[in-house]
Length: 380
Image 1 (cartoon, rainbow, N blue to C red):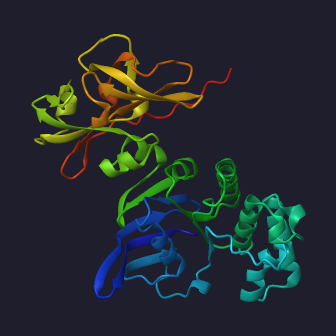
Image 2 (tube, one colour; image 1 turned 180 degrees about the vertical axis):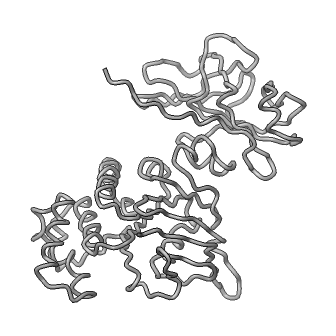
Image 3 (cartoon, one colour; image 1 turned 90 degrees about the vertical axis):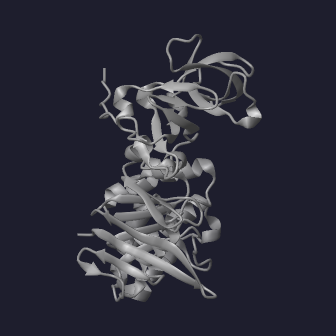
């Protein structure tokens, strides 16, 4: 059973006497067959974490376990873990088949016919069975990435580690490969840890997301949990594109007071805020409602600044009436068939069931929207 556990894992680098904490007390358990994505901005510690799991970096503190086996002092070659890097790192003088077989030939005493069988079966699985006699220079970027992935699959490891493997592909191919990787991982059922800085990849590919910032684990949960019920301001702002709108506010009793509006709260929401008065109000762009007239106390006059048409949707940049766009705008996402134009006077609504409230000083989430159970579509 390939359950992978990180237990208070820490990595400290010494830079000419200066102590740099790259990964700080990270604990997460990755279930057998689970697809976990480590995500965060550049320099947050996600690749360092992956390299510690692989055995390419020493651990400063904590434990990494595969099942009940502690991996800390086990060499990388003996960990039964295969890693796919951002760089394909294919041998240019070898064929596809030779590249995929090389690791097995060098690291095992497996018979040649068994190696050939594994390579051919894996090549068929990856859709490159007709390319096994070609050289890397004769392959496209997507095909080279499949070869690099195949080189890991033929080992039949307990765990796959993937360090931004799609970063070198163009946008269209990257989207196609995301789907293929999910299908392959589902078919193989191999525990997988995937590193990316792209939160779209994290949302679309993972069973769970582990979000890091400055080496600290901010949240680990399903994509919908991290999206709708973020632990803090960082997670709320990092997950989602376009990102959540934030407004600095002060609470006066049951009223939130911002520079441009006042927002009345229900007793239910007030009860979740304790005695905190300095807050941040958040609402996702798709939850901002555009209207033609004021209908409630949470509707406000605004001016359309810029419209970004995307076909299926429009991203509308707005400014509160009487304010200057240079002082900041907020966003709404509307259906692509609905038309608004720059300069248009409009009303925006912030439904209370969709708002998030954070403590300004710590960023801790005090109130998130409810995550309703997903309903299966009705098929007619």
